Image 1 (cartoon, rainbow, N blue to C red):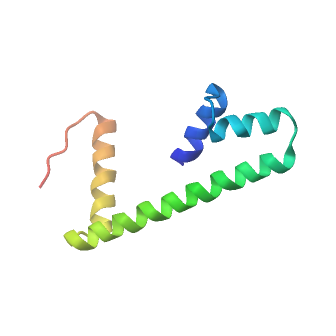
Image 2 (cartoon, rainbow, N blue to C red):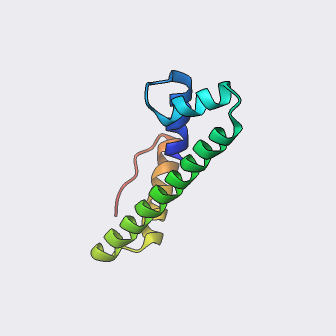
Length: 91
């Protein structure tokens, strides 16, 4: 998701030599083939980095012996307490 957000920001800001710039200009000049190609590149890069991140996260969890359920539960509880304006006491 962060890749797509970053490229959306590039489309708005149009920095030189970026994917966002190429996407913007292909849209501006109605170059449909190039627009689809850059969109495909963005989707593939996003999927690859997500899978890489999840793979590394699972490896770290295995090394530390941590269950992914515990991490999700702690993250959820922290978000709830933060929303409620309270501090969470860790057991």
